[in-house]
Image (cartoon, rainbow, N blue to C red):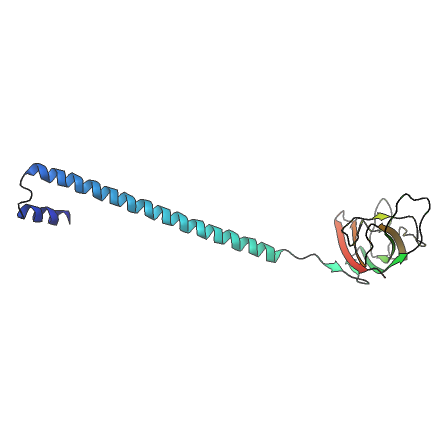
Length: 205
C-alpha cells in the first residue's frame, strides 16, 4: 500500500524531492505504528473483558453448584425417630403446656411446657456414664432461647445402658413467648467422639 501510494504521488509530480519521500515515509511509519498499537491495546482490552466475563460466569456457576450440593438440614416432627446408627434413637412424643408454677423460682415465663420424649441405647458406650440425652436448646415462636423450669416434670431422664430404653423422659421449659410450636435441638457426642445433632419442630398441645 505504501509503495503504491508513493508511486502515485511521484507520478502526479506532487513530490519531486527525495527529502519529502523520507518525510512521507516517516509519517506513514508513525501512523502505521500508532494504528497497530491501538489495535493491539484494543485486542488486549477485549480479551481481558472476555476473560473477566468468563471468570464471573465460572464463579457464579461454582457458587450455584455449591448451593445445590449443600444438603438441607432435616427437621424432625412429632414421633419422628432420630437414629444414629449403632448409637441411639430418640423421638419426641408430645409437648404439653402446664399451669404449674414454682413459687421459689424468680423466672416469670409466659408459658411453661413439658417435653415428653423416649430414647433407646443402641450401642453407645462411654467412660463417663451411660447414654443420657436431654434437649440442648429450646426456642419459642418469638425466637427466644428458653430456660429449663423447675415444675411440671414427673419422670426425669436417666443414664441408660446399651440395650435399654428410657421411656417417657420429661423436661420442662419456661417460654418467654406463648407458642403453638417450638423448636427443640438435641446435641450429643457419640461413642466415637463425633458430635451429633437433630432439630425438632413440634406443636404445643
